[in-house]
Image 1 (tube, helix red, strand yellow):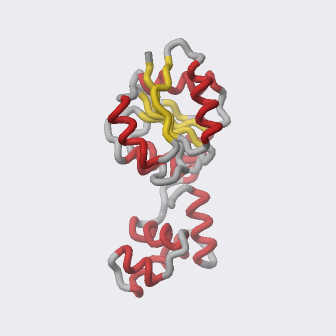
Image 2 (cartoon, rainbow, N blue to C red; image 1 turned 135 degrees about the vertical axis):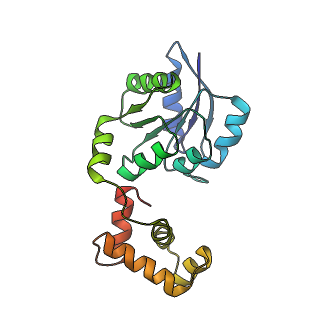
Length: 197
């Protein structure tokens, strides 16, 4: 029996997935959580074979959760098939990446494959990630842009990153230029659309 933990903040979707997986003879959903910051405790308590994570969750996003659970078999189930998300997930050791509009049979098959040590990548998402290429942003540019996306001022970004305001402005300006954007808002939108922040 493959023991699965589901982490998705949308309760109706999470329960529907659990019900569908419950129809599989070899899969058992042993725990469900609605927040990313609840996953580690649930993994410790229930010892799942595979963790199925949504990307967008309160408390901690699914990609950050994946990065915090090295060695755990994980699969991302998401509505957001952004190229940067797929690359970050793979770098974190995630072995499956599947859209939420996949069939129940496809999800069950992906769980089985990940459990067996294989990989399952949705072909459309994988093709998009390959075509998009790597993020042109440095870590600092990405961090500054991500904080700006949350509404932080230059002063607040400088405080959070332990940098001078001038350095923050330089990072933001560089990010805008690299993304071919006309301003900070356009740069944020581009970076979010690509899954780079």
